[in-house]
Amino acid sequence: MQKLDINQLQFKELTQTISDQSNFKGLHLSSAQLNTLITKTHEFLGESQRILITDRKQPTNEGYFVLEVSKQEIRLLKSKSISRSEYRFIFEKNEFKLNNKSIDVSFLDQFLVFIEHISNELPSGKLEVLEE
Image (cartoon, rainbow, N blue to C red; front, side):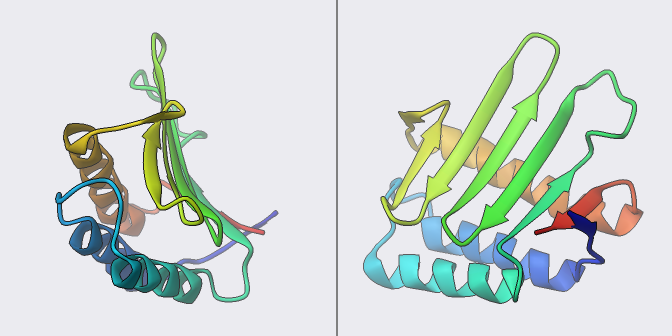
């Protein structure tokens, strides 16, 4: 894996697309919404198969996260000393999951808030961004 200097505006656009397309109406997107999200994800990835964004190397007592954006899914792993949560949106199945279980809209909000947090932290230079 090599480090990638990521365009924060492009990531913000992807974040906004996730938020706009999910629109809190449920956990399955319409065909048009899903196609929009897939298109924005492919634009974000460019030639990469996947991009990882993490704070794993930052010393903190609050745990770490790993965000993986690929052409198959968007995956967010949050790990703390006593808990581990894995959020996934799988394009092919058009579904959001938390720890491999389908989730309701209340959990989707947590996912979107954390994605926005990552987007806001990118300019700080504290996050590691890798591409494959």
